[in-house]
Amino acid sequence: MFTISEILKAVNGTLIQGPAKADVRSVGIDSRSVKKGELFIAIKGDVFDGHDFVADVIARGVRAVVVGRAVSVKAPDVSVILVKDTVSALGDIARFHRLRFNVPVIALTGSAGKTTTKEMMAAVLGRKYKVLKNEGTQNNHIGVPLTLLKLKPAHRIVVLECGTNQPGDMAWLADVARPQTAVFTNIGASHLEKLKSVKGVLQEKWALTSHMGRGDTVIVNADDALLAGQIRRKNDFRVITYGLKEGVDWQAVDIRRSGNLYFKVRGKTIELKPCGFQNVYNALAAVSCGALFKVPLAAVSRVLKAFDGLAGRGQILRLGRGWMINDTYNANPVSMRAALQTLQAVETQGQRIFVAADMLELGSRSRALHLAMGESIAAAGVDVLISAGPMAGLMAAQARRSNKKIQVFACADAQSAQKYLTKVFHNGDAVLIKGSRRMKMEQVSEFLLASPDKKIE
Image (cartoon, rainbow, N blue to C red; front, side, top):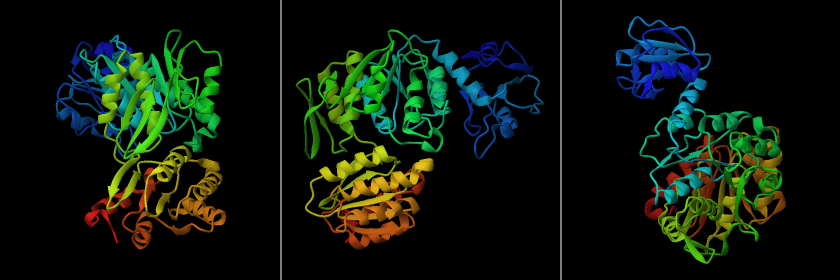
């Protein structure tokens, strides 16, 4: 519940019409789902402009709107608040609401593994607390504020995934969320179109700590060279480290795969359902966070053993007598190398097939990074490489130059790649499917899973 006066103060807006003493029950931005008594914020998106639907939401019972430009509102009892920017106003209201509650806010970011780590952390903390988390990948300037606006007195902890693709995003999200704990998965070549370099990625991601201070905590993958360098600098934060190397606070040892993935932490065995090797790091982040908030390690182990992988994020699924690694949600060099490690580790008597699509948003370094990935594929024991897209074609050509034993098929898109896959696949093969979101590689995984008896020969 908010009063119009509270909204005006939070957004530094001007009331241009209607009562200042009215109340609103909640906040919405989607004209199709607003409720009676809600505050509607008119946000201009890539396709629709919320200002065009103000009359519609008023007809549905909305009695207060936040706008960024003048709109015609004939109902005199509707409060109209004018602001410079409605997205900023959404964040301002979310911050105001978040600061009403004295609950820990944990924010996490990184170049890969964010969503899986967030889900693992929320599951672990959920053993002891009522947790609010982002749904799916609502990790941007819209999703994070909308998540915070769901905060209720019953919640005891908040877990927020925070994403960025341009300078300034992360500092803004940190200002809105005001976390006391920040978790970092890794830093790599991602969103270079606007972040320019890996050091630019680090600078942008580390801005998650920009509203944290003495006594707050950062949890860091210390095996990541850039993050390890960052925590060696003077910081006011308490630092908790995790990784595979000695000297970290939470170290994974005795890693093995026997169907499921196993490792030990401080003598306790952690078991994960079939998944990619990178999930050891994701699970270590969850272990570290659980320990910080006093969830017993035995309980953490039980939660992680029951944790189901997320669709399209490194799932290892039976495919006839072989395996499919479904990692189709997105791709950058960090996550693609991790997926390649998983393909190498999967036990198979058949071929290792990699269906690889373009890695997008890499800017001027795209060509070089795709060529480097081709070198990695050539050295990884892949038997068949099927590329989809022009940049992945460069990757395929480099792999062919570096290793004459690999069968290579360069295709224009996911549909063409799927056709070649039907020609080379045999029951018992291990197939990795990966590419950036816009490459639609889920079409290939869905095709394989829909095939009779999970085989296509």
